[in-house]
Image (cartoon, rainbow, N blue to C red; front, side, top):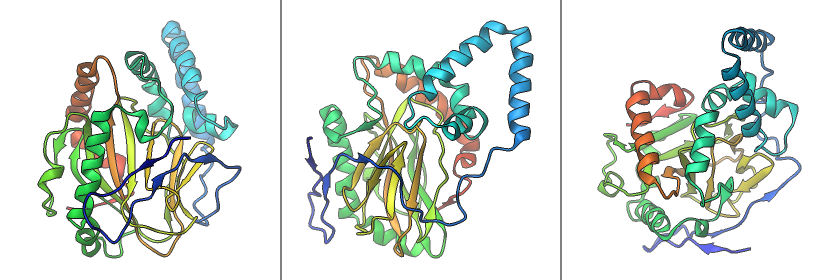
Amino acid sequence: MSQVEIQPSVQDPVQAQDVVQPQPVAQAPAVAPGRAATKTPVVRIAVTLLFMGAAGWFLPRVVVIYAICGAVDVLRNRPLRWDTVRRYFFGNGLLTWALSPLNLLFDLLCLPYRNRGIFQLTDLPPGYQAEIQTLIDVAYSHNLVGALEAKMGEKKRGMVFFQWYGRKIETSIDIPAYTQDFKYLRTIGVSIFNKKQSTHRHYGPLRVTYRVLYNINTIDDPAVYVQVGDVVHRWRDGKLFIFDDTLQHESHNGSDAVRYCLFVDILRPSLVPWVLGGAVVLVRWTLTPVRRIFYKNWTMIK
C-alpha cells in the first residue's frame, strides 16, 4: 500500500498527515442521533413506478435503456443492500439515475483511466497532484481556517466557494491563488461542519469530476469521518480523501470541534479532456442560477 506525504510548504502548527488508504468497516459509529436516513415515502415509490410504467408504454426502448443503465450504475455501490437500491431509484439518487447513461458514457471516455471509486493522490497524473498541493499550501499560508472562524459563528454547516465549476465566485475572503485559472481544478471551496453535524447518505449527480476533500485543521477524534459505501475514512488517520461522489456517501462530525475541509472538484483524467471540460461548462451555464438547491442545508458564506 503506497502512502503519500502531503506536507505544506510553509511553516504551520498543523502538520499534514500521511494519506492512508481507508479500510472497509462493518459499521460506522453513530454520531448524530435522530439523523438516520428516513424511509422513502410510499407515495414517491408509487409515483416513480407509475411514471416508468407509463413511459414504458409509449417509449419502451428508453425505459429498457434506463433500467439497464441504472442497474449497472447502482451495482457499483458496496455494500449493495435494499436501502442502497431504494435510495438510488426512489430517493435522493433519482437525478443520478436520470444521468446514468451520460455517466456511463463519461466512464468510457475516460479510459484507460479506470474509475477506482476511491483514489490515492498518486493515482492521479502529476499535473493534478501539483494543483491539489497548491491549494493545500495556500490554505496554510493564508490561514484559511482563521479567516473563516469569525464568519462561521454558530452556523450548523457552512460553505464558501471561490470557484464553482470554473465560475469565479466573489467572496470577502481575498485569496487570489484560489481564483486563478487551473487546468484540472473546477470547483474550489471550503466545507465547514460545526460540532455534532452530519449529512444523510446521498449520491452526487454527475460523474464528469471527482471530489477532493482535505481536512485543514486537525481533529483527533474517530467520530469525524467521511464514508463512501462501506469504506470509512477518519480524518485523524489522513487529511486527504479523493473519491467518486456519484457513489453513495455521507459525512460526519461527531466531535466538539469545528471541522474545516477543502471542497474541490477535479476534472476526471481523460484522453479527451476537452469533452469533459465542455460538459463542465454546460453544467455551469445550466445550474448556476439554481445551484443553491444542491447546498440547501448549508449556509453560504460570502
